[in-house]
Length: 212
Image (tube, rainbow, N blue to C red; front, top):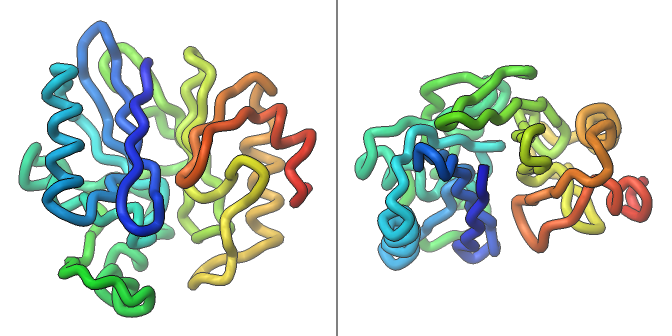
């Protein structure tokens, strides 16, 4: 499968479009569009590539990763898929906006489909495997494409860093343990697409990430 990266909102959040080039089915992962212009940009990319959105997946339910969920629901009739342990955050999106002082009119985002450790999400002829990587939030997940050698890590693992653990439900020891168990056991050449910042590889982070 192929990956398109778009960066949205005041947090510099990475929204990913993962698609199967043979069927043109795609998943939008962590839609962070916070205004009409960003919504149009996403739709233009989908239309230009001739893609058919079949999934909207949230690696976790912090506000910067869910701002575009309602747009995708209206535009494509798709409801969010996320881990059950993050459902409470989806029900507090408006509260999160107040906490971060965001000048946007946001709605809460109820999770429609729960994703669990080991679940397989099919996108055309491709597959993403769900890896539960809690610690940044209780229900944080990563999405692993074994065939094409990449993993989308949300805010668990970044290039040279890890996700913050001081938000509700966060835990530093839990995050460190989960990254070691679920991510650092992947092949070292696996490309990492994080929730913010540039891509990296599992090998580079297991060797030189200062948190390990």
